[in-house]
Length: 290
Ligand code: NAI
Ligand code: 15L
Image 1 (cartoon, protein in one colour):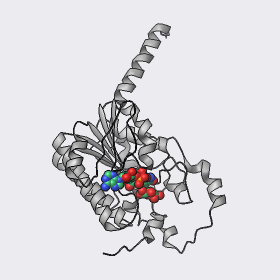
Image 2 (cartoon, rainbow, N blue to C red):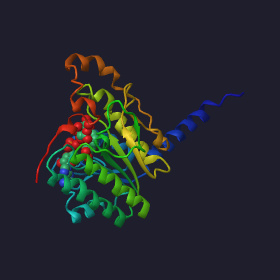
Image 3 (cartoon, protein in one colour):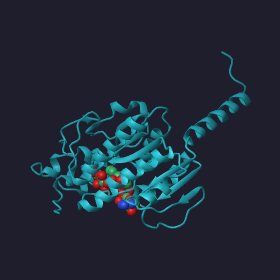
């Protein structure tokens, strides 16, 4: 076979680069909620590869906008503020909200009412694709000896987990009724490193989180998809076979941290529910009363 002339192959390589760039920047203005939080900060620079303009939002002030950025503060419980925040965006990465177990009041405002406000605003403004930061705590009452996929019925381990299950159901309704596509990413534990032995199974690196969100934003047909947000960890409780169409391929693994995590953490007490269930400490938090 004749080989390609160097100038022709470099033109093809440039074209390919342009196509990849275009497919990453499918959405002109991308809204990132929860931008002041841990994952918001981790994704801020990374998500600039996915859009021309990154609109950042949170309810707390987190400083000025940088290049290719807009900042629009909003409390998710404030319908009017959310409406303004969503106007003019093409897709949303929704991280904002209460991120741990606690009293029901704030969870109700941010994760339940806030989710409704966001989807209503998306419907009104014609936004057709959302990546929702759901959580492994939607299914936290499965055992660590279970392997589940997205077809397993929810078994929330906390009020927080219940609120994320509500978000998954609400987004399914908005898909079935209005065609808004959503990826419900049941994030495991996304931190710089796994912090304990449980997180060796649940860990999601920041780079893999960004790969996963990029896949959700760019796959041609997303539909309403539930996908477990995890890196390529050797020990896992989750099977992503129901979300192959998203095209997410993790490239990191918690395995490189295993020895160090074992060395600095005690043997788990296997009689303790915290060590038995996938949700870890969340299964034993509360109650929080009226
Ligand atoms: P975080 O608590 O650091 O950030 C959440 C952000 O949401 C904060 O900046 C907070 O100010 C904002 N927020 C809270 N209530 C709000 C309201 N009413 N209106 C507007 N903004 C509000 O949490 P993190 O770790 O960055 O997580 C981001 C998202 O991912 C959360 O929705 C969390 O539930 C989800 N997630 C995170 C996991 C992780 O391992 N980091 C695991 C599973 C889910
Ligand atoms: C979550 O849903 C929380 O937002 C995060 O702070 C971690 O606790 C994580 O789950 C986890 O399960 O490790």
